[in-house]
Length: 111
Image 1 (cartoon, rainbow, N blue to C red):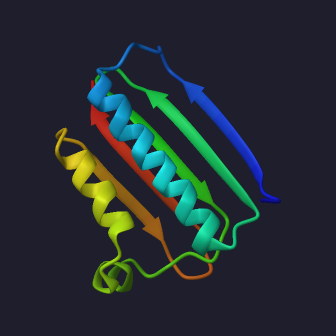
Image 2 (spheres, rainbow, N blue to C red):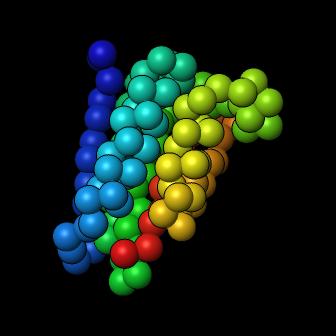
């Protein structure tokens, strides 16, 4: 796709329950697909952080960004599906994006 991509992982890696792995995998795939389809990004970074009580997967890009309010109002299934998948596990979705400023999506789930 002509993108620079980087993946990093830090913290003490611990086995995760299958349902948590599946939710984080689904989040990551959707976040990467959104960056490829919509962001016009030149680079994407994925960081997996194992903390003492939670695992966080963060996907950041240097693309065009978006207005979060407009994205929710547009009713697309991508962000909604990510949020619902994480909330079913007691997790949360963090969105940081502004037009022309790239996007950072983070999924956090307790371990």
